[in-house]
Length: 375
Image: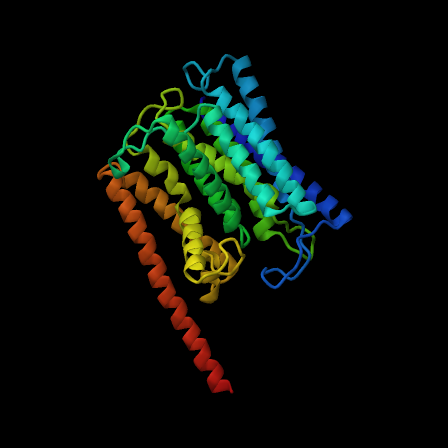
């Protein structure tokens, strides 16, 4: 019976996304609101980029309505006093509204990156203000409790990093929405296990609305005017959503869920791929003397495509990689210390990148030899 509390809103979110996205497509073609075509992007046809407009309104409205209904029927989602949890969700919805407006303005008329960055910091500050912040490292680097003067700035930094990592990973069809769907589903199941019903509800509402967008983004045909991108409106709000869920799971707070030894490692395992990838890209730009925030074609999906993979195959491979880290960390923290698991994550990532660079170089040399033979 409790699972219906999650399943019904999830299905409603899928249904609402299925209704709203065709309407967005209609308006986009009517008003010619398309993603600009340039040499750095893969698509060479006009495609709307306002799919993310459907995310935050469905997330916010459906979550609020679901909570009201739950309390009307005397179902207390957490089974305890939720007065400490509700402010977290209320300020989350405020943050979603702010990033929704900033992203929409950027998709329609363009917003300078500095202003987007300021908006991200403001939204990140809402987390500590609501009482949500990283207060325990669970033994990582042999640190446990974090005082507010360390945990709160760390939380702000983590939220801004996650938002930008999610925004930058949005490079090929289905990748960003697929990664967030994997993350929300994984964390949603864990929240259900710990009976944190409000967080599970938000996680699966997000996954539901994304599933409808995923269909149009990956399988929609451009010629039939059925394909759409999420734009910054979507990637910014999704980044905030997954940051909220991850930090909520990582926080040592009985009002959210019972204590679990590997919470912080498990929570952020959903973000290893986008966060490690943006860290690698920034390091490469710094090493090569390039501007840190200058767009290039050095992200993980670019590396996959350069080996000859199709867009769909690259997307599926990266989603499989993200799922591997989720499952590996979830199992590993049951048997070994958090420090060892984090070290394994770093070594696995470095090893994977090293091997893939070798594959990429071999493919490039093979193409060069083939061109020389043709000449």
